Image (cartoon, rainbow, N blue to C red; front, top):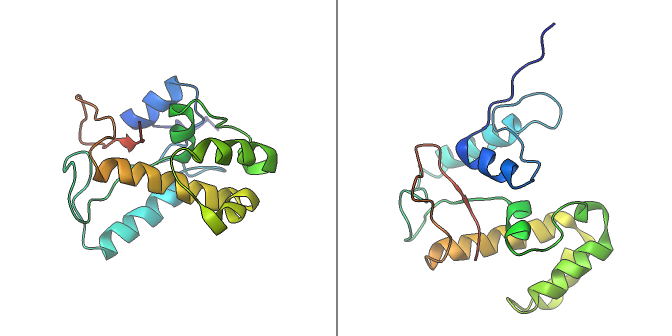
Length: 149
């Protein structure tokens, strides 16, 4: 049996070139991105296909793709291994204090990498909303991953 080929979108290839282990949105084998893609497409359909960034750069209800690991890499923070390390999550959260006050939610982000990922995705979404997310000039029909500067 020949190995299956993994196809990557341009945005995925760009982040892979920067050293991130980005999942292929079409790969269906273990640790694949296809289930995530299918779930996202279902949510997009249920939302009535809102306008998508980067084609629509801002506005009410703009959908943007975020990748927490890319956000951490953008800021020069630990972007690998934080799921299994409360110490690394603590280091990341300490760095985030200059950007936002998590208040009582800080502990949830320390305890759960999923909670931290949600905060990171929200910060990327805010960057899209306030038009500070770096915009790729050569963006094609595949979209792009938004990060806050």
